[in-house]
Image: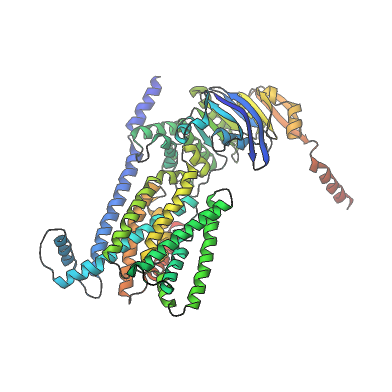
Length: 277
Length: 353
């Protein structure tokens, strides 16, 4: 399924959050969405998922505008794993993942054998089947993230949106989750759009990177085209060293120092006054 | 390819263990609760100033249903059919309504402190009842106060929704705050009323504490359809409430129309609550406690939580009322709080050792 985002503009009250965002994502493409905090990544994901309505522009799935689809139809095509998920209640892992089947069920019907079979298939794939009867509250952060991704996969979407799936995870879990996502893209032809702060992970796993700054697309393309010293300096205000690593066969970005941020000057004067004392 | 096939076969062979297990568990819970409810009806009918043995109760009920197996006396039949059974059924429906409303509110606000009265229904109903006791002549006989209470409850929700509308964006948070504001406003007016009308103040206070006095079949007949229908409606939305447990965003993503649910369910819950309190007064604690207890016992899935809370709420309130009858006709609201608190603390302790 092809995703096309067409000239999106979005406002929170009078404040413009997104401006003229356009891009396309093909079947089986891993798209990394990078940009500084507050650049509009989460808002963009919410617009693609239909949770927020853009003021101007639209999102198309295979030439069909998403506002023409109802919630359930949309849920069978698009799934989102939000940045934070409230988990105050003692739900079982299996029940959480079963919720992914809701868009396929009638209002009064219950999940059937087919649903259980499908859910178990996805749980095997993401290595969460052994957690089925545990409470969602008592499993580790990495396991929980895998469970929430499995929940989204149980919707059997063609496009999966992820908002910082690796935040708060240790490096082992980070790599594990990203490998899992990459495998889904390669083997199942899933399209993934993943907002991500870790530029090294973005460079390593994305087929295409979209760099957003102040609600505008700064640059789109392969990691090597987008993650350049100039772009990093301009968008992230960071002087960085960019190298190619043979072992992981990807770019490695090592930030060296910040440049030109406003608070830098004032902070320097504070440090100077400390030294004088 | 072969490996994949083997994998599929393996999944099939494991059987549909988890869903079936859940279904059996749900069925068992409901069976126990229904049996519990039947036993409760018979046992509490026996209790009272005149003890009537359960065997006689069963023969009276079966006589009324058309099977004459004899062995009862006429006075006992009158006591049971006109005094005790209506009161018990009113208790069942009121307990059911308050518990279901509590489940809906707690699920919707994802807040364990929420209960049926968070949107100011109890204060609205109390104010309506107080006004009718103090000022209104009995226009529709003994049903003036219930009617006024019901209108008061609806008035409260109406005001809450309009305040939220006035403030712009609709969120459950603003709904909760508006509800609390209205509850305080109505309580303040009520306090003034009680203070100025010392003549009727103890009747008003008695109403506020809540009780099932003066139950008759007409009252049961009026509130039963409202409560059963609303409980069924809530049950229809139970999967949406489940999805909301994972947050609004995820619920949206699963295909739940969150904005619609968040507008319609508080109205539904407040409607059942108004219907319940109009005849019984603002009985406290049931709507807060039963959903918690049932969530600990059956889990947070609303598809089982709503029906089981409905049954358990009915059972609990009937027993509380039986206790109230034996303890010199105390208001049942006092008994629910007295009996509920220790049990609640026990459950909390058992859960977090």
